[in-house]
Image (cartoon, rainbow, N blue to C red):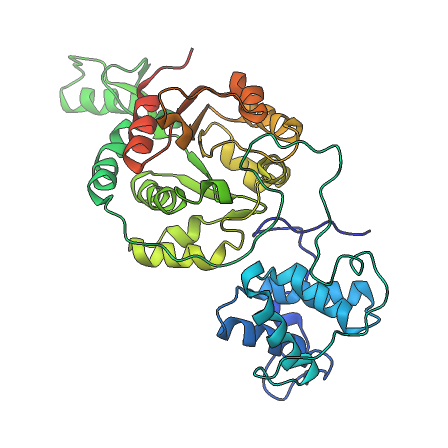
Amino acid sequence: MTRGPRIFGENPWDGAPAPGAWPGLGRSGENPLPAALRPFLALAARLRAAGFAAAPDQTQGFIAATGLLGPRCMGDVRRAAHALFGPPPERRGEFDALFDAVFLGRALAAPAAGRDEDMPSAFDAAGPDAMPEAEEGEEPAGAAASAAERLHARSFAALDEAAALAAFRRAAPALLPRRLGRRLMRDDRGARPDVRRAFRAMARRDGELAALPRMGRRTRQRRVLLLVDVSGSMKGQTDSALRTAHALLRAAERAEVFTLGTRLTRVTRALAHRAAAAALARAAGLVADWDGGTRLGDALQVFLAVPRFAAHARGALVVVLSDGLERGGPEALVAAMTRLRRLAWGILWLTPLKADAGFAPSTAALAAILPLLDRLGDGSAPARVCAEVLAFAREVRP
């Protein structure tokens, strides 16, 4: 069975072997590395040294993709490298130079004359770097949305948001929504009598009982699920959104954070670090599709298709930070939001476009999912995001 393209970071169904399963990656002297694999691993090391995103799973996918393609020439291997590592368009020449240095033995300073003798393919007519055009019937649901996948790392600039996020961390534990738990605790206004405490009090007072002790169900904080859009149309708000996510993880008892773009990536562990700078640096290296295309519907459907991911949404407050500019028709997004509506306790969609007083959800995607939302709020700044979350938590849903 042929597997589809990988579009998210943590995939429990990923068929690629673990790093220790590749020959030659074990202990010294065991399983010598085959000569055919050496340039593939050397390319990943050279790319990381040059500042490209080359995660271990991308390297494994590159090797697996090359084997599945059955390359007939070096051009097929080059195209597999472009597809798996996704170099930015402005650095495509530097990427090809590193590829030539590893696979063809060319020096980086000397430009390669001519082009490889590729077999005829659909890309030859438009050039070796051409990309396939979108389908003829595809209509963008948002003006700034894109279907292109752009994979690279990201650095976070220091922003003056410390005061708003610190206030949110102090207020969130008491104001975030809570639910009744299964365990019982001492509660003088509870509906259930505490028989054990009653008998202990009677034993101390020679059988007299002044008041009947009671118990009530303990409350627990609801899980908060934060979905952050990292596509190109949200480029101006991504830094502050991840800082808000870090503050939420520090304040909430239970919270989960995922990024959405052309892929789905769980960044909860990366952002759980106590220091904000270290947490954001770890997230920057984990997410590969910063400022890329927009496939919110597909990414949400992948989230719901993985049982251990979908369980995070059950009975949770779901907060989506996105402008809702989806590429193509809104059908995939509507289907995913319909199922998410059945799982979640509440859905709060925060868009930076709401900062405009004249904003109206006129895009096809937002207009289609608007009946499925509990609130469409302002997500233009961390202070507004924190205020919207806390205000929504205070409300009682019908």
